[in-house]
Length: 104
Image 1 (cartoon, rainbow, N blue to C red):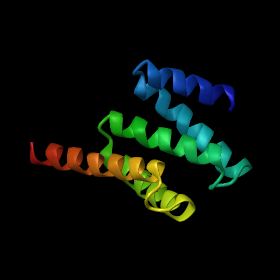
Image 2 (cartoon, one colour):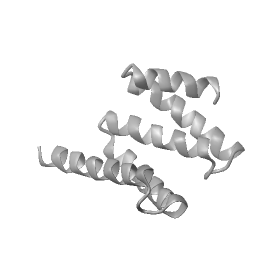
Image 3 (cartoon, rainbow, N blue to C red):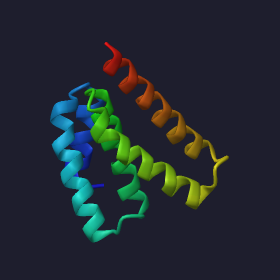
């Protein structure tokens, strides 16, 4: 875990989502290049970025990341894995929030 990732996580925990977002984006780009797109660290940062985007109400940006994560988790761990189910639930919640915002 690099220092930017540690800082992004600390900012996320503190609720500083707008500050955490660019750090997660930088770390994700770095990990995708150096570790590969399916490495555990890369996947973890991708998930944290999706949560950060969703937490800011940036549902359209978060949705494809969650969809990618769900496909990855189903392929790697299967549909019944608790982590896969969590990603599925997060995606469903995101889609419901997006519908609610659109209706408002």
